[in-house]
Image (cartoon, rainbow, N blue to C red; front, side):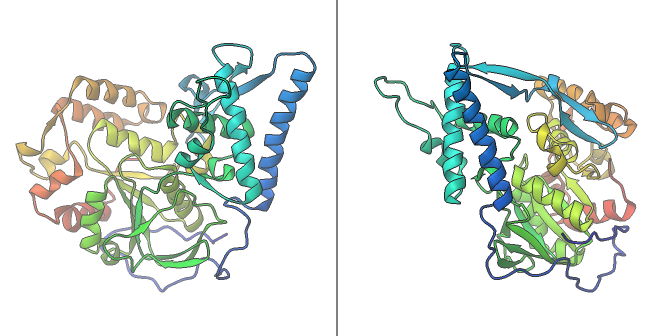
Length: 401
């Protein structure tokens, strides 16, 4: 594992440090079996076989087969103040075979378990879409399909994660790549060296699986990470070479960041000690994205320990920026009833409720009566956000925690 880097004040006066290797280079190709490694694959296979054996033994004993599925609901999620992350509780729900309400889900769970077993034994991976098609067929003698659409298989795969105690990556399932990175770091992706300083206008596409068996950090000179909400904003910063001028790594998550992006950010923060600053829209959605990055999400609370970044900072855009940056009325997007309701809900989150700066931020947005996008800063100047706004926020350490 790479050594931690010491954090330091980030701003205009940051000095460029000498290049430093943070982990040893690997052979041209990794010999690790599968995205999670041989030992993890064996553990996951054992868990699947144990599930199947339990079902078979129960049935052969003349009893009704049943699964206990950990609940991925708000009522089974709590906020750990000490760790500053969301955690899943111990509540479970029964999924019996001989119950019309759950029999279909029971069948799908075993069907997808068998599909995952095939992947593990073949040392291959499949996309979420591919897994849907692998498990899709018409039940013999009926017109009933095993799956109506991909949403069903995706939901069952999330259930499998908590049933088996294995992450999606350990099930050899990956999602569509969504998210980009550029900056002062070199990574090894499945043994291939990727220099993120030389990725042109498109950047390095952050993969869905970012575990150490696939992604290794070879050399890093960056002092921090600037994560922006959308690709359009990322393009502005990349074109202006912000990452080069301010010695950082620039990432984007195409809105709500997928698991691969969140995992990459967590590893960069945890293993390399790089602070993470978030530039998101001034609206309930931007606030929620920050919440997910920082504390984790309710649906994936069981993954918070490997994906949440408790020290992440919200740089903006802020409700006070309308006056502070002297923006025009043209940037105002009126809050609708749904926005107002969502903002009040977010204000009641335990991790925001006791933080006065966040209460003031949400209250200010509601009193304004409008929301703003990061792109609104373009009305000042095309490069105002990259050349003035963010550098000033960094210099003054002006952000919300």
